[in-house]
Image (cartoon, rainbow, N blue to C red):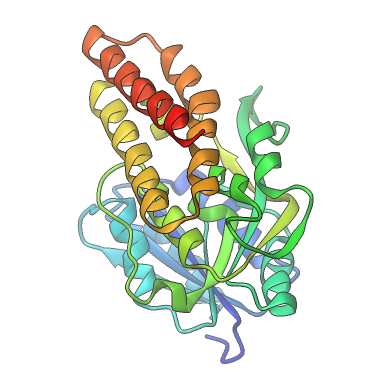
Length: 297
C-alpha cells in the first residue's frame, strides 16, 4: 500500500468474474497513480475472488477482502469504508469501467479548490453485438455537471442532486466518518444526498469519468423495476433522498430534485408493465411530489 496514496477506490463485487478484470485494469490505468483500491468480494460463487486476488498479488496498491457469504452491495462498500486511510474516497462497481483520467480530474479538482465533493459525468455501456458500446451522456447527467464548476453550494447549483450514483464522484474521507450505506437495493440515494448536504463546497467535472455497464445478462437492478419488490425499494429510496434534502438542504435543492423525479424517474416507471398495486404506488408518489411542488411555488 503506497504511503503517499491520495484516494481509496472501493470496489465491491459479487459474481462478476466476467467483468472484474476490465474494471480493475481501468483502475490500474489511471493517470493519477497515487491511489489504493480496496476490493471486496461479497461471497461470490464464481471466480471473482480469484480475479481480485490476482490483482492484489501483483500490485500492492490493491487490497483484497472476502465476505464468507453474500451481505449485499451496501455492506460490501461499508467494509471498504472501514479500511480507508487516505484523504479522499471514491467507488467503482466491479462490472463498470473507470475512464483513465477519472481520478486525475476528480481528485485534482478537490486538491485545487479545497471542496469536499467532486462530481463527474458517466455514460452507459450497453450490449452491442458481441460486446458493449458507450451511449451518450444522458441530459440529466449533463445538467448535474456542466459547465464545470468549482466550490459551489447546493443553493448555487441545486441540479447536482440529480447525480445520485456513488461511483461518479470523489469525496473527502472525513464526510464518511459516521456515514454508511444502508442495506437493501438503491443504496446510493440517501447517502449521496447526505454527502451533498454535508459538503461545504462542491466541484463538477463536465466530462465522463465512468462507464456504467447495463449487463447483457439482465442482472442490473434497474432492469428489474417492474418487480413489485424492486419498485417498492426504488420508491422508498426516492423518498429517503427527498427527506434528507427537505431536512438539511436549501429549498431550491429540494425543488430541483422533485422536478427531476417528476420529469425523469416517474415517466420511466410509468412506462413499465406494472401490476395495479405497483402502478398505484407510483401514482401515489407522483401525487405527493406534485403537491409539494405546488406548495413550494
